[in-house]
Length: 80
Image (cartoon, rainbow, N blue to C red; front, side, top):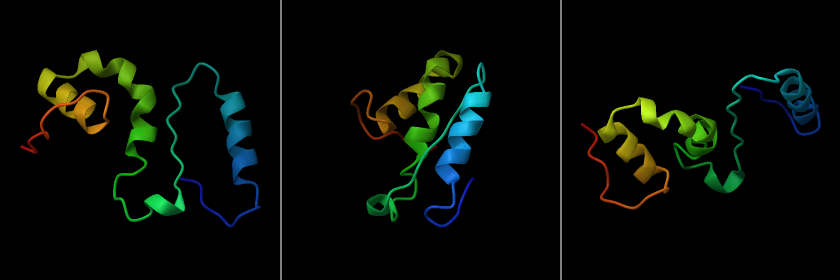
């Protein structure tokens, strides 16, 4: 997690690091003021690069994630 006041160089630092991370899986998310009260607002952004590996998880979990992320419709997944 990278936090700091506006204008201190967070974005520049992240761009530099991303440029050095060729060949690596990068997962990132950025928050916006209007989603501050949503507990998992950044989760879809963060997990997006991982969706290509969804075939490696069991069907019930994969189905729950695709419905939660809005890539397919269906009934609300059961938590347990």
